[in-house]
Image (tube, rainbow, N blue to C red):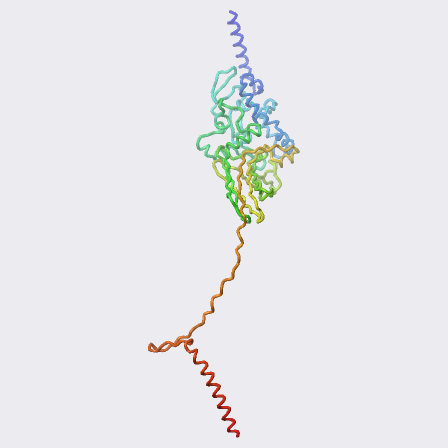
Amino acid sequence: MRKILLWIAFSAIVLGLGTVLASASPQTSPQSCGACHEREYEEWGRSAHAIASRSETFTALVKSAPQAGSGWGEQPCLLCHAPLASANGTSDGVSCEACHFVESVGGIGNGDFTLSTDGVVRGPIGRQAPHPTVASDLMTDSLFCAACHEQYQPVTGVLLQGTYSEWLDSPAASEGIGCQDCHMQSPDGVSHEFAASARSPEAKAAALGQAISMSVQAPESLRAGDYAVLQVTLENVGAGHSLPTGKAEGYEMWLEVTIEAADGRVLHHERLSYGVVYENSDGEHDVPVTLWDAAGIFADHRLAPDRAVVERFPFAVPMDVQCSARIEARLMYGSRPSWLSEALGLPDVEAMPVHADSAAIEILAPRPSPTYIAPTPEPTPVQVPTSTGGAGETEVRAEGRGWVAPFLIAGAGLLILVGAWALHRRAV
């Protein structure tokens, strides 16, 4: 009898809890969910969703936002960064109910979703629980993520975050691989850490390293004075969207190449950024433009899915280099751009290596300078006249008459003497 009474009491408590949840608007805290869903709660606590409304970058950006009436409206950022704030005033970021109470998605981007007020928890499959549950196909559809992971500037309409549209244009979408297939899978089943979205910079850099391949192509040897081109090939082989993705304020990724001789001289150093560069309404882009002032996209240099990018770095070897050189190529990632840290008065974040590769170049002696030797002049050809007589005439060459000249000269001299003698006799 006592066991029966205890069972009835327990059932009443469970049913009462279910009734309360079913009749309430979304207001359960993540901690209360964690009482039963301990693993899921711990994973969520390590995710970027957990601090979406209180991260250092977000809170500083919101403080620098334009005032109400500028077209941004009343805190539109909170629609995605704290979905329950308008419902019950909580600021738990993207909490459990912020996803599991989504009833529908009205469109792509800018928080266009509707939270239910029936207290029914949505999930990919319906399960028995102390609270009402229902299976929702929307939970496994990439459109579910598009409600927040696609953002447009509400005044100018400029695309600020295009993760969903990037996925739509990727091979992953055509192969039926959705957001949840990559970002919510783990060896234990479904993960609520959201994989590469983890807060740990080390984890994010490691995830980028798995998604991006990098190779360095350089000549094995050069001669001092030579000119060469170093090639670095990057390819997004593991993500169904561009890398990096998200708003430009949330990341910084760059390729850094250094060629240093063994004697310490830097032969070449270059840094190439990967990201989106905005321009303001005046067309200015040289000074970094924040999302508040973005009126257009000046450049988008990122790694699109399954497309290799070959970066070329030309360099010259000085004539007096008498040692080998070493190439260092590093792909780096930071969770906040250095220019934004400076603008918001925040400390710089530590950059993490995504990939690092090196190669050695043997520097050989310069090519020998050729000694110029003037060519021996060819003898000037002498034009030899030939006879133009008939067929029966024998050709007589001028050089065959060389013996006649002395006799002609002697004869001329004799005639002069005879003439002189004749004149003398006549005068007598």
